[in-house]
Amino acid sequence: MTDSTAVKVKKNSSIFQIISEFIFRYPKYFALLFFLILIEGFITAITIVSMIPLTDYLLDPALASPNKITSFVVQIATHFDLRINFWVFGLLFVSLNILTGVFKIGIKFAILKIKYTVLRGLFDDALGTFFNSRWEFFSGSGRGRLLNTLNKEMNTIGDTLGHIATQLAQFFQFFIYLSVPFWLNASMTMTALILALSFGVPFLLINRISYKLGKLNTSTSNILLGTLSEILQSARIILGFGEQRQAKKQYLDAFDDHVDVTLKSQTLVTAVPAFFAPLGILAAVIALGMALNRNESLSELVAVLWSLLTALPILASLLHTNISINNFIPSYEQLVDLRIQATKYKEVQGTKLFKQLDRGIALKNVEFCYPNNKPVFTKLNLFIKKNQMTAIVGESGSGKSTITDLVLGLQSPTHGQILIDDLPFNNWNQNSFRKKVGYIPQEPILFYASIRDNLLWSKSDAKEEDLWQALKLSNADYFVKNLSEGIDTIVGERGVRLSGGQRQRIALARALLRNPDLLILDEATSSLDTDSELMIQKSIEGLSHSITILVVAHRLSTISKADKIYVLKLGEILEEGSFEMLSNKHDSIFSGMLSKQNLKK
Image 1 (cartoon, rainbow, N blue to C red):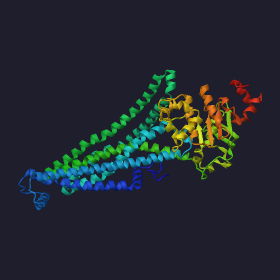
Image 2: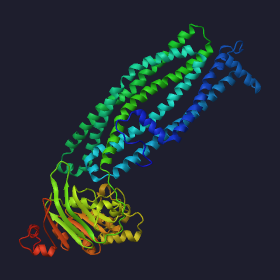
Image 3: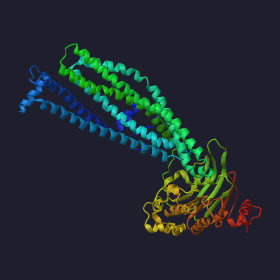
Image 4: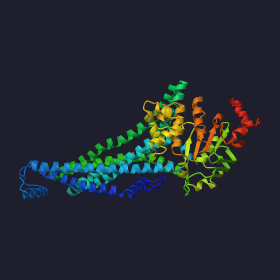
């Protein structure tokens, strides 16, 4: 865990444990909050007391029989040579209310600071945990669940963190606000408090309903965001099949399911304070009526009533926050579940830093199996020699792309070893190795940014001449120069403003910019037109024997200069050798593959 961890990963933690860990990790922010609460409470108490002389003056401007508090204020005013009149008492009351408002703003600032500081810590820790895990975590967690957790549920958690801090503030404020009326008139205050608490008991029974609605709200939101993400990712095929109406219906059905739950959940949160607030006022009015029958001091009763009408709504707010917390817990539990899951897939980083490839990469007796599937490989052996082009070919499903995942460490073998320069993969700091790898998948991923920024993402300190050299090596410099904005052209979402061949060449340039020791092309030309394929092929051939290249190929013309070719079928290497050797062997599998692609001489 990093220092930024907001809370420890504990499943089924109580809300009290969560709050205590927040306070323990961010003591200075909570100390500031409590300090402001104490000052604000002290000023509020004085404000309440200041109503007594104002009320006494309104009832009797001559102040023939003033309250003892009024007499004390008059003595202070006389000491400062202030003339006793309405404006002295009125402005004192208003000034204290303004000062109280200033401290309320300070308290709100402290609450927001706590909310966003803790939320940042949660994001920092969650993303850190996620990206320290292996690829299996991302592939097995579900896009909708991840997106919803990091988007909507994190917002819910952040809002509730603010509610929790507010509840802590209000808890202390409530007792401070009640201290003055208890001092002025204990019996009236106690009556109002007992009645208000009695009215509030039934609302506590709603907690279980709120938690269930919170769980449903989170699960339906997972489905909703997952559906939306899938539809947007599949926009091309939806349009191509003419199934826009079906896609829209699929999303709207998920939307309706979520709205059905969230309407109940949000209405419940709003209903609790709305119903309790008038009950709190009723409690104060009943207590006032009982006190009037006892001929209590009217000015003190006014001050007590004002204080109760300030304090009792806090009970309504505490009930509201309690319901919100029960909605928050499922969101928090989902975040914790994902972090626990990510921890199970934590990538074990070795200590040896990778500087350069000296001999090559070997897969020795490798076995691999995806969860709940048959083994992809059993005792797979191959070697990727330094500064040579190694190609892997075979029919779909033979395990070609899995080999690139194993070489990158995105997947771990069930048995056997991946050796880099004769050292097991886990002995190396894997990220130091990956930083010396240029990887180009079948579908190139470009960010919604300029070509320049897409290149700099790979190597942030690259100079202008480095960018153009990489573009030249990938045969992309010519078309980039002819774009309207040149290298600063925005490529669009996932590079949609460029053709497939252009995207692939930018992806190749991005890989080459970091001067990799190993270049991996995972079926990088399988979906390209002939001209684009020739461009990529020309780039690869220009790089051969200067860096180590691993090519997973569907189009065999791409690997005509390969030094070593492995032919896979159902996870087993059936043939190996150079392009020339295998193509000249007339009864070989590879020769048959060439014939099918009309590449046989």
